[in-house]
Image (cartoon, rainbow, N blue to C red; front, side, top):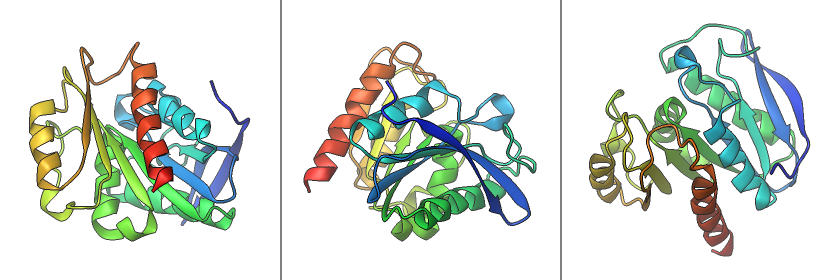
Length: 209
């Protein structure tokens, strides 16, 4: 369901080379999409990452999904979320240099956790943010530093790494809307269309504000 022909792109992040796929649809609006855990097989070639891409592409956003350091053809090594924050910032800079003016941040699983670390410090770089299945059962999130910095949280009700009820309490704490997909675990297999529909509803609403 991709609406833009994606092109393979590379950019430098310090001494590292980062690999991405760019779908150019807009000069104005774009999204940086962050993938799940690279040590658990996560990469930009992931069903949830592709669902995020499709939702934004359907609203004519330029999409940039990329591989964190050490994943795919991105050089370097896994850095426990530290260097990966710099990878996100470098992806943002790449879109900016390509003329994209307003940039969303969207992260899934590990990508949501690393994204939350970036939002703690640099949320002003992004016009809005969506975190899908932030793995709060596995990683520590500094929710006290995330109030009004996340615009949508999404989880399945059977998520093994993201307890939906705990996430709902945190969502209220940080003043963030949350959507739950029924009969869905962490991997969204067979639930991609439902996820796209939820994301589309939010993006359309955001575009109208």
